[in-house]
Length: 215
Image 1: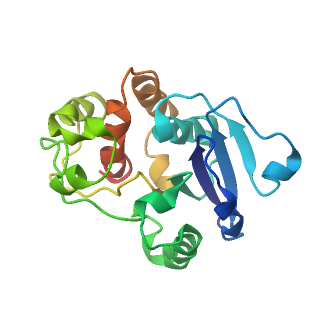
Image 2: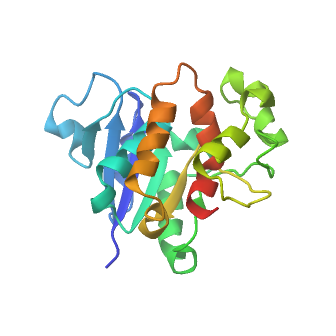
Image 3: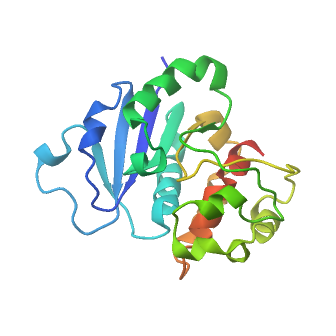
């Protein structure tokens, strides 16, 4: 039977909704503050993991991949702790159930949750729809997010011309797609993004996750 993990990048958000996550998932909550969980009753339904406050949600995603590289589930869903902010009108546990039901057709694909942006290219940096979304103020200028340097540094052989990405960096991916890259590949990206002085690197990763796994 296939195994399924759900990874939440948390910064003190209320995650009581996660009690409704389908039982097929093992839930890992990466907490980036010093306030971990006081008693067992606070985390009886998930695995708490203390994570450095580095790289926003991308840092927690990468830490999970790096630290559990040899122990990855067959399928992993990565999400911010408040996914509903990025999928208005949807209930994330229901979306997870839909994902499980669709796996026969999507098992070898990058699976986006929530809203998709307009198509972007390595030379465009930021889609027009993404500019209209209520994201970090620094995201208002597409010039803040040049994607080509990332491609040259980490994905020089990628030939994809256009793609869409899920707003909020909420997606599912198979172990097979994660393992197409070495552990050191993810370690290098973590070092690139985790300790940068701005959120630009995390915003770039939000846009290129599909290319990391499928490009």
